[in-house]
Length: 332
Image (cartoon, rainbow, N blue to C red; front, side, top):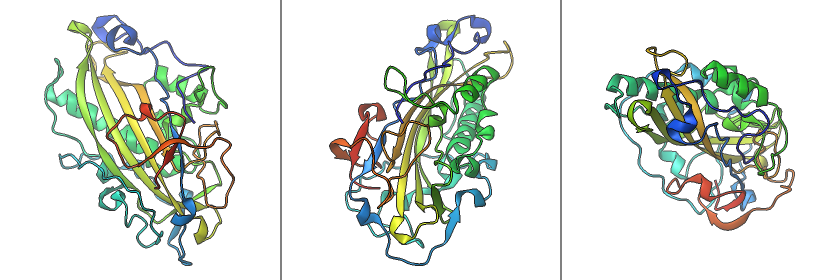
């Protein structure tokens, strides 16, 4: 589940308003990178399994869609996550106890809109609107219950401009990897569990991260770039399984969205997703269909074994691109 685009990757966004230049000339990569979606296989998953027989289990398909909430929240930033190295027993009444996620906000409340300031010729009002749009994108990609259950990501696709939406839809169901070893499926932009495999325990997903704004390019050809780095922590168990299959999935996404008047000079700023990096810690490596396949205790074995010095999936101090392939982790 690593990868940058294959098959139908677009050449770039439409002409950027009065600049008349494409993204390759404005701000680097000409097409959205489906990131190096690193898939981590948890070490010692059996230690994370719960011993509790009762559960407040909620199947992914059975909860109100979280992406309906796009209201700005109080300004502020969250503290850096502290690594965890010791697995804890999974109590369904408090599934995040003993992890950094215990101190994270619940759901969309964890996606904070920073104080907006003018950036590179873009007004504070434009920057604030861009922050809000990126917040909507994050909610639709990682908190929407239909998407989490592996169904249609229509709510996410509707936030993209037409050119990128067509590319996203065209590549959604692709399988395998390209010649660079990257997943072809655009579903890697989302957290989407393989259909019928996973139950979410409880109603809470923990969220932690921040977003920043910058101008990229030069002169009149500058675009407004929003970078978001977030963790989404999901308490799950195997669909129809018992307490012994409980675990946490920690999905990190580092998202870059660039704003310009791509289709309408003088009109409102429009988003273009240029980078999607990161991936799910606790997933099986080597299945390249775009879905997250949790490495449930006692479940199917990963066809690709983890390597490298174990890292904490809660550590956001280094970019995810430095951990390519199947990386060993300390636990979720």
